[in-house]
Length: 368
Ligand SMILES: Cc1ncc(COP(=O)(O)O)c(C=O)c1O
Image: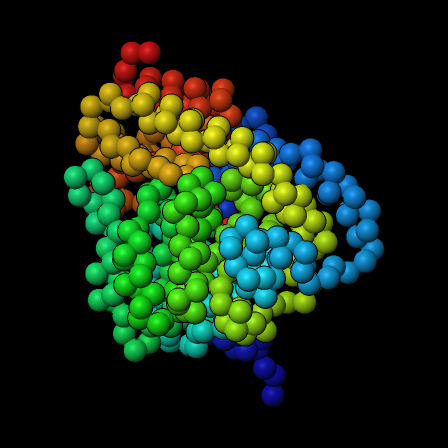
C-alpha cells in the first residue's frame, strides 16, 4: 500500500498559502518607490543601534542567551517587577503565535475587532481556530470601538480576545473603562500596543497588575524603526508569561536583535525625536487635506492615517493607482460600511509627506 503525503496534512492548514506581503515584495524589487504602505519608520536605525549591531554581529558564532538584560530593561521602562514579566519574540507576529498556541484547541474561537491587523486571523487559522470578527461602528465620520459588541460575541468557545491599542488602520484608542470591562471576563485578553510609543501615556500595561489574563504585546518595528530586525515582546503576569514561554522555540531571538533592541531602549532621545517627528507630520498631513469636500480623515495616534474618500465619488483603488504612477505605494482596504473609498498612508520622510499631500490634492482637483 502506498500513502500520499497530501493526506497527512492537518485539515486546517490545507490550501492555506504562505503569507506574502505583495507591496513589501514590490518595494524591495523597486527601491525607487516611496514605501508609504507598511507602517514602517522612514528613519534608519540610530548610530547607537548600528554600533550594537556591529559589535554583537562579531559574536554571532555563539548562541544567544535568554535575554535577561533586555527583558529587565523592558520591565523597568514599563514599571513591571522584572525580566520574568517579559517574553521575547521574533517580531510581535511571533508573540501572537505563541500566545495563540498556549490557549487554542481546534474549533476554539478568537474574537478580533475589525478592521484590524491581518495576522491574528492567519495565526488562528493555522491552529484550527475560528476567528470571530466584531466590526467597529462607523458613525459621524468616526470609527468607534464596540466593547458591547465584543462582550456579546463571547461564547463558551472563546479562548482569546484581541484588541489593538491604538488600532491599525483606524489609529484611535478604546476607552480605558471598556478595556477593564473586557479584562473583567477573565478570558485571555491581548492588548496589541504595536504603536503605543506615539502616545505612551495611553498604554494599558497597568491592567496587568489586577488582571493576569491581560497580555500586552509590543514591537520594535514601528516607533523604534527596527522592522527588519524582528524583535517583539509580550508583557504580562509572571506565572502566565512563564507558562506561555513553554511554546518558545529555543533561541528564537538572535543575539544581534536583543542587543540592538537594548541599545534602542537606552537611546530615549532617539525615540523622542522619532515620535515628535511622526506626530507633527501626522498633524501636517491631516491639516493639509482637511478642505477636500466629502473626504473623511480618521485622526491618528500612530504612524499611519486612514481615509475614506467614498463620498467624493472616487475609490481608494483609484487613489492607489494614481499614487503608484507617481512612484508612491499606499495601502488599500477592502470595501466596507458601503464604501470603497478606503486607503491608508504611512508617514514617510518630510519630503515624502509633502509629495503625498501634493499627489492627493492634485487627484481630487484641489488647488495647492
Ligand atoms: C497592529 C499591529 N500589530 C502588530 C504588528 C506586527 O509587528 P511585528 O513587526 O512586530 O510583527 C503590526 C504590523 O504592522 C500591526 O499593525
